[in-house]
Length: 306
Image 1 (cartoon, rainbow, N blue to C red):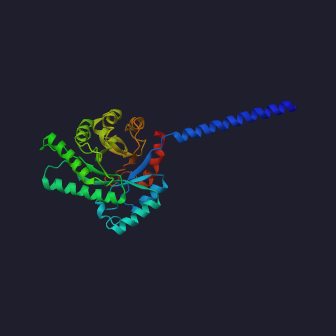
Image 2: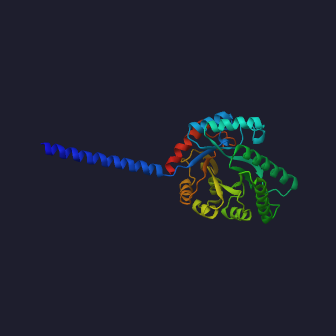
Image 3: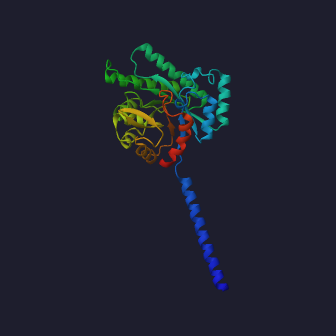
C-alpha cells in the first residue's frame, strides 16, 4: 500500500511540475509577443481638456498621445498649455507625471502651394510646430501634401512637396524632431508617395501611413503599400470604416471592413517599432460615437491583432 501511495505521490509531483512548466512556458511566450505602442489623436476628443486627455491615456494603457488641437485651438503654439516657457514647463511635468509621451504635433501645414505667400505661411506654421516639438521632446510633427491642383503640372507639385519637406528638415536639424508627411488628400497612392519621399531623402523626413486614407481611395493591398514605402514609414494612423450608400462611416476598430489585419501583419513582419495611433475623427464628424466609448475601446480591440 505504501509503495502505491509513494508512486501516486511521485506521479502527482510529475504532473504538477509539468503543468507548472507549461504555465511558465506560456507566460514566457506571452512576454515574447509583440506589444504595440499605442497612442491616440486629440482629433477624437475635441471637447476634452488637456488634463482629461492625459488622464484617459494613462487610465487606458496608452503610451503616447498625438496632439491635433486642444479644445477650440488647432494652432498648438497658441494653446494656453504651450504659449509661454512657464506653461510649457508645467505641461511637461503633467505629461511626465502620467508616464505619457507626446508622439507627434499635427500641424495643418500644406506643402503643395506654388503661390509664394501661401507657401511661406504654411512653411512658417510647420517651423513653429518644430520649435514647440523640440521643447516638448516630441518625436514628430505632421504636415500634409494635400492636393494635386489641376492648374499645376503634376511634377511641379511633387517638386514643391519634396522641397518643402527638405526645407523643414534642414530647419529641424539638431532638434530631434522628424517631419512626417501624411498620406492624405489627393496624395494617397503608393507610387506618388514613393516618388515624393525618394526626392526628399533626409534623416529627419519620414511619413505617416494612414491605412484607411490610402486604401479607401486606391484599394491598393496594404502589404504592397508597406513593401514600397517601408523605408519611410515612421508612424501609423489607425481607424476603421464601413460604406453606407457610397459614403464612408467611421466605426470602432474591428467593426468595419478596412484591411487592418493585412496591414498589421505586414508591419509586424517588417519590424515596425513605432506607434499605432488611433485617429477617431470626432472633430470633423460630430455624429460618430463619443470618445468616452471609443478611446477606452481601442487598446482592447487592438489585442486581437497582436
